[in-house]
Length: 294
Image 1 (cartoon, rainbow, N blue to C red):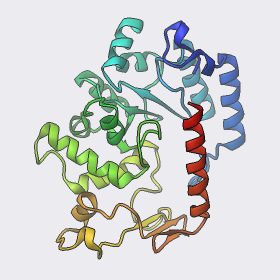
Image 2 (image 1 turned 120 degrees about the vertical axis):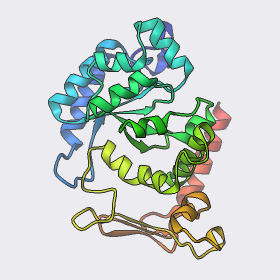
Image 3 (image 1 turned 180 degrees about the horizontal axis):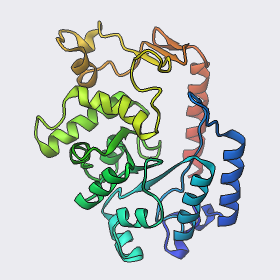
Image 4 (image 1 turned 90 degrees about the vertical axis):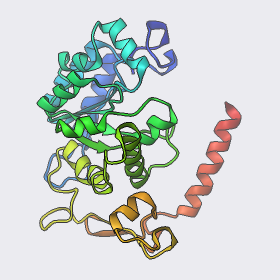
C-alpha cells in the first residue's frame, strides 16, 4: 500500500510504503521464491492491495513487472458501493475500465470480490480471460452485496472461491464458501440459480482455472495427487440420497482425510503435520494480547 489517508487512500499513513521500495521487494520475492515449473507448489503473484490504496503508477508498474517476470496479478476490485464511488470520482471511470487501462485484465489476472461488476465489466472479463475470486462469506460479513456469479458463469468468466482474510471472515473453509455461494445466487436469482454440483465445481476446478493450473482441480490420471476426503456416514449427512448435495448443503465441513501431492496431511480428522493443540493455545494468547493493546 502506498497511498495513505492523508493522500485520499484507505490505509493509515503509518502502514504505507515508498513505491520504489515496494517494487524492489516484489522483484526480490519473485526472484527468490517463485517456482515456474509444472506442478510447482510455490508460486508468487504480485498483489497491490486495491486501487484505493496504491497509485495509478504503481498499478501500471506492477502489471509491467509481472509480465516481465512471468507471474500472475491479483488485487481487490469492485467490492462494494464505496469502491465504485471512489473509482468514478478519482479515476473518472468504473473499476473494470480502470483495470483494463492499466493492464490489469487478461488470463494472468484475477480480482477478488467483484461484487459490483456491471454487464459491460462482466463482458470485459469474459473476453479477456480475467478471473474472479468470489468470497461470499466475507461479502456477507461486511454487507458488501451479492456478487453476480450467475451472470459471470453464464458469460464464461473464470470464477473460483476465496475466503478473503481473517479481518472479514471467521473461517478459511472452502466448503462453507461453496454453500454460501450457492445460497446467495438462489437468494438473488431464484431456487434454480445454482446447484450443489456447480458450487463444488467452482470450489475446485474453478479455482484451478483462475490460477491457470491445468494440473489440478479434479481427480484424473496425470493430475496432482491432491485429495480431500469427507466422511458422510455421520449425523450431518444422515439420510442423504445425493452425496454432493449433502456435502455442500449439510456438511460435514471438516475433512476426515487430506492428501497433498501424495502426502497424507490429515488422517481421521487429525492434522498430522503440526501440533494443533499447542498452536491453538498460542493463537488464543496472542489474540487476547492484541485485544488488550487495542
